[in-house]
Amino acid sequence: MGSQPPAAAAAGSAPPRALDAAAVRQVLPHGEEAVLVDHVPWLEPGREAIGVLRPLGELRTGVPRPPDGTVPPLLLLEAAAQLAGLVIAPLAGPLAGPIPAWLAGARDFRFPAPAPAGLPLTACVRIERRVGRLVYAHARCHAGATVCAEGTVMVAVVPGEG
Image (tube, rainbow, N blue to C red; front, side):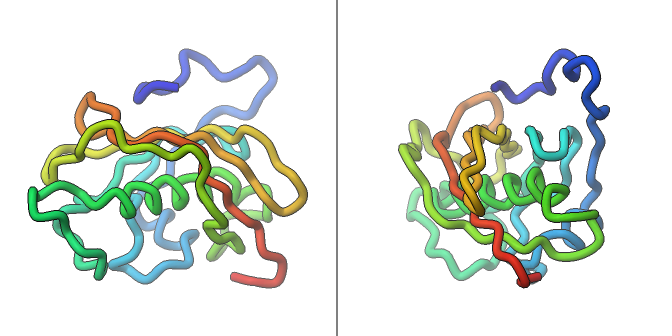
């Protein structure tokens, strides 16, 4: 899974679509300052997406900033979970409002390189499997061309929320 869209959608699958910033904010249940995904140029609902992240080094999220000026790893993990939520949102119904899902955990998530504040940040997410209400998604975040975060996020679909 790279930072470029897959070469082609699988035969017979729905064509990919995009979400602009307004659509992202409509679907994610976070407040304005806590939405970390700016827009999604490639989305295959229920399967995978590529998202462009907001400039995380400039947001006032309340997450302490490292003294070296890099993006806090916790924000990269949360951004990956938000993108995973956008991928699974159609599984919970039409994209008409906040998704009923929460970050439930992370597995084998690593941060191989720092993400300097100010570099363009992207995230790629591919759904691996779903077990009951828990969705496992492989995520990778890039700062420019460098992988700065990678692993599995677990998102719980919460009935009756949203």
